[in-house]
Length: 118
Image (cartoon, rainbow, N blue to C red; front, side):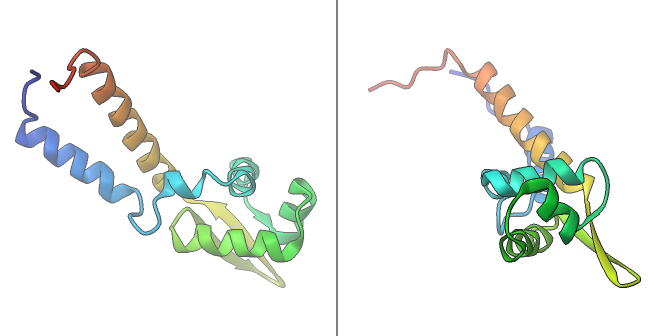
């Protein structure tokens, strides 16, 4: 049997979980290949919908729909600049998802030999 997590561990996990949007979950959101590609393109810097259409090869309504979901999840921010709206990544949302995944990997590593009895 493994040790029970300390209160400090619970607080750290709770803080990490609050960094990733619960509705919808950022990890699940990025499972879509086009949304993942949009995030990858935006990692290189802010871009307009037209840039994203050109870079992904997707149709504009499809890109716009994915951007809406990414904005609602707090992964992407919209920034009006003249006649255009630029979209940029919000690194804290991605960092929160990365911390969550790293925490799950560490838990799996720590409990790899804790077989449950039948």
